[in-house]
View 1: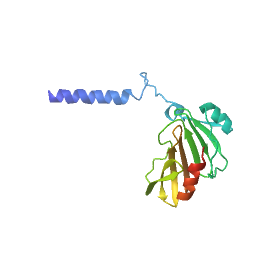
View 2: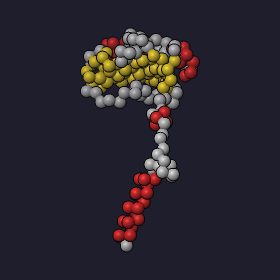
View 3: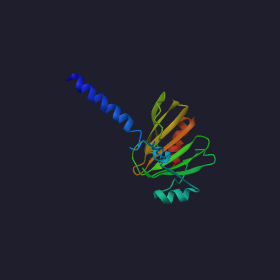
View 4: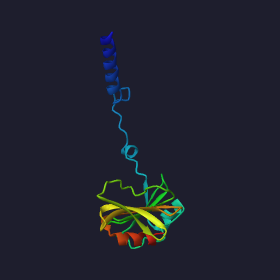
Length: 162
């Protein structure tokens, strides 16, 4: 009985393996890369155009340098991003979670306070903060930087970004 069960399982496994690679007539089926790698981001020429899509804008990016900015919207979560070629980005979303998109583990994690806002920060050190995230009661914000900010710079950024 065991041999029959093993034989049936082996046949089913082989059929599933070979059957999944064909369309039933022996032809190979290609899945378009757009389906596999669907990009949820849409770029816009101006911040105003992107803001019109999500229903809010980023009024100020503070002292975050954004060289040759690209304005993007991730419609799946209604997120607006200004991304610079220099590796810095500012994000805002009608959300209350971590919208940074950066889930790397860093040596340094802490919190900073700017006015009545507490922000989570993470980076290589207190002098090289790469990710800042916070929520102001209505919107979630995130700032990413490849170079990093000092804790003092991070506090000013949180206070200035609207």
